[in-house]
Amino acid sequence: MVFCAMIVGIRATSFVALLGAMGIAIGIALQGSLSHFAGGMLLMGFKPFKVGDIIKAQDETGTVKAITVFNTIIETPQKQIVYLPNGPLSSGKIINYSKSGRMRLDINFIVDFKSDFNKIKALILDIIIDHPLVHKQPSPNVYIEEMGEKGMKILVTGHTNTHDFLKASFDIKEKIKHALEEAGIDFGIKPS
Image (cartoon, rainbow, N blue to C red):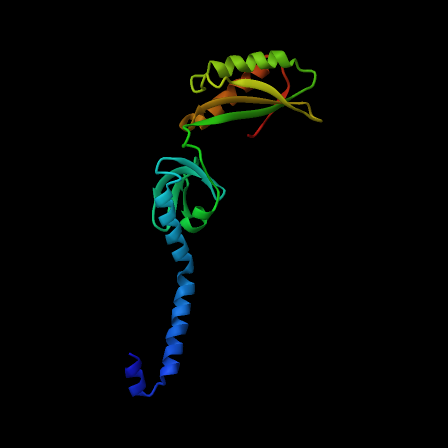
């Protein structure tokens, strides 16, 4: 090729410089793709998650639908499909909620200081211990997590299967709300 360029009258040094510049331009253009490709190879090799796992990565949480060479596809609880580029994914923090098969359920709410904590604890334990989606071990519990300006911050804990987490969380929060209202206890549930 260089010989043909010399016959036409193009100097070899100019031609080599042109080829070098084109190589650099192509390398820069492919840099992101190569990073994603390498990340995909790492993810497929080390397998920090598999299709069907629930993960959190790059501020996105969802169920892994596919792992391709360049990106990982997840579906969020809102049924959005998110494409996570494998380059940053392979070098960033990944939380795999499915690996252990269970998640700790934490529900926080605030009650007035005048509220009877023992009564609140008994009401909530009746709900969470008997709930079919909550594991018996480790035992669910109710704590005073904090004493703040607005009242006592209550923490309700229990463990559930990863795939039952959202259903259990929503159901238990609703049951706690009704139980506290029926008991005449003033409260405010905080997002957890």
